[in-house]
Length: 345
Image (cartoon, rainbow, N blue to C red):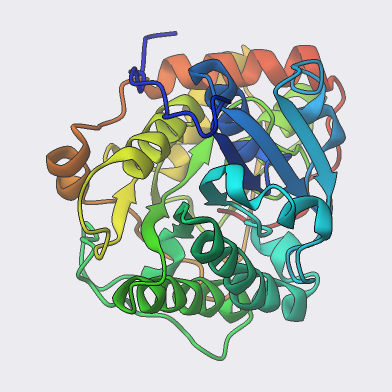
């Protein structure tokens, strides 16, 4: 795997100890990779996760590190004494806590909305009390089914605010508003990342994302499911690239009052993704088409000019390389994948 770049400057120490980074949602797909990268950089890491959509196996490689601690907690609830007691040490707060695929966030839409609004407010208040920098992982879903292509950060989106995806789309938009309101009031230093489609090891095989769906179906020898005619586009970013972008954004010195797109600008159709996965599977399989889910975006591609200018960041792992690593991980670590759950991300 190619080097995706590192944040080489070690974080400042507080009271002679490693700086503590809190990662909400740290047992999830992206969160677990972020926790590992922060530990490798020299941080101590406190991971909060309610395990509603995360996988306990994602923590196996982390819990043996003496600088890692885990607390099962739902950020919708007020933060517990175990966290508040660490306030003086906390220097960075990453909020990745929210189900991120339609079948999962639509399973309990009320909780999804509260996680994004109430949970984000709890973490922002902690950042204010700790004097810590706060990073919100928002989403390309704030652009909805976009009328502008590719999507720049100043595009206000085309979101169905009453549709079945609104708990997530509008929840993230509200979380962004909260973060920027804290920043405007001088209450916290914030960063907001809008994440586009990400893939890689530690994905939940049953999360309903197109990469995990197709790989799992190929490994089982099942029919491969495509929603719509497969002409809809996505831009797939390998997880190590995305984590490097999150860390670079957190450490970037700017006023933080601009969201930053993080994703791979190489756009491709779902059918093109399918062909690459078929190539890894080594054979032809029957493909079945189903109707597109409600409000599923037809095109998705980030404009990453701002990330390039502010952070000097861009993805480095080509899809062929990242997919091969992801396929091998599913094959070795997951074996027989869980049944796909029926939507495309």
